[in-house]
Amino acid sequence: MKITTQGKGIKIGERLEGKITAKMSKFDKYFGEEGSFNVRIRPEGSLMVVEITLKLDNKIYRAEARDEEILTAVDKTVDKLESQIRKQKTKLLKKKKDYPQIASYLEEDNSADFDYEIENETKITRKKTFTLRPMTSEDAILQMEMLGHNFFVYLDSDTDSVCVIYRRKDGNYGLLEPEY
Image (cartoon, rainbow, N blue to C red; front, side):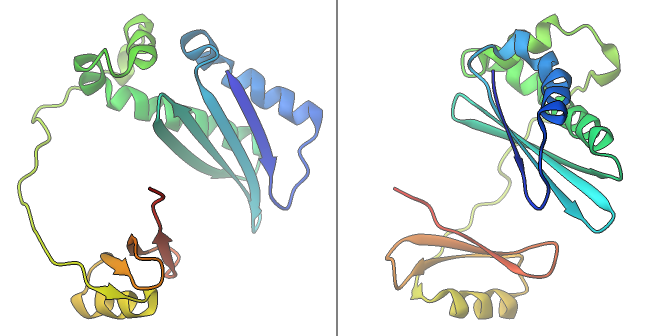
């Protein structure tokens, strides 16, 4: 298991990095060398924000937590990441061939307090087709606002690629530009 620790606006010492690695060692026996974890820590006012991203077999899991203490925030983030994996338990166990490491983690894990059952199978209930029109990102934001949507898919006139503009929780906008 590879763990990369980064600090933005904060210096991560060897002692802290060791403690973070120890807290994340619970995943080691299941993911071995397969899993790649990226831990990012940044201050946000009086709180410390810890973000953990797990990359495993071209799949990405991400969790984030805030607390006044770094290690408490790390604990909360690790718990959220573990909870995300367990919430997907039923789906993942149905697709063992696609998620072998996570399926073995869930099968060996005996804690019953995170046993989620999915009552209704998730399915697509609506399909919408539309024509992509070339436009700039500013035009896409304007179009998204006029429609009252949280995101908008468009063809970028500068790069000739399909992009997505979305409204972030902080009120600003994000841009997704795929590479293909």
